[in-house]
Image 1: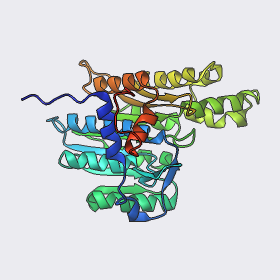
Image 2 (image 1 turned 60 degrees about the vertical axis):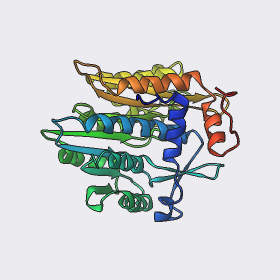
Image 3 (image 1 turned 90 degrees about the horizontal axis):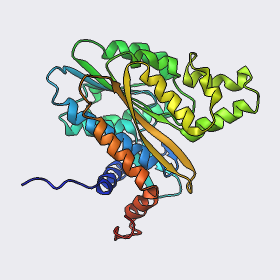
Image 4 (image 1 turned 180 degrees about the vertical axis):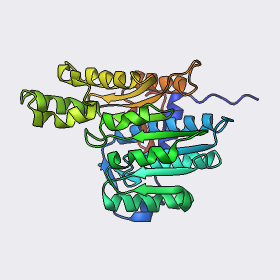
Length: 316
């Protein structure tokens, strides 16, 4: 008997339940967590969705000998959802869980976190769900360690999923990512579109003097001054994605936006262009279409998670 296909809402709700922490991960390092607004749940949902697709596809690749997960902005492994009694699992923990479901696909989970306490918390939390000998957490800036990570995860039969979870313009710049973009790796990048727009306007009102442009110049790369020509938030997002595409890569985005809640960002998935269509991309396009058709999905799912509604028919 064919399994009933899960509708998009059920899939999102299932993903949200998956990323919520019951206290197990938080208790590995009590008091150490990142704290972000409600929309973080949907960013993590899109991460989990993309990681899960990646693991399902890669486990069946006969050529694959060594598979790695790399998170360049790993955080603490646990996120407090602001103004709600909810904790969510960080992207490295979700990667470990998805890997476990596929027979521990990732030979190593390699993370970078610049803040010492968070790096220590992340290591403890990862070791609670994944074998200690397969976990590496570097306590430094990502741009300092990227060359070493590339060397460790390259070679015949190797592939990796790289995550760059920007909260703003801070972190590795585009030029730092170019060696990763040039190789056969899949990459997930968060673009905080609204934050980029604020940084653009900060530089614009100062007539783009060099000091005000430093963060954006690093974020977009030395060879991309076109960010100064932006007329809207979407221009900055498309410019960044086109930069990625220029390295013979395909990019699909999951856009998460809500004017009432004042947030606008995208999770981008990029892979090398191939002769055949990537098996990842169809599911990512479907998820993006769903978020576009249901802009109030954030409130609906959060209310459902916190049991404020029991019937969904009136909302969908």
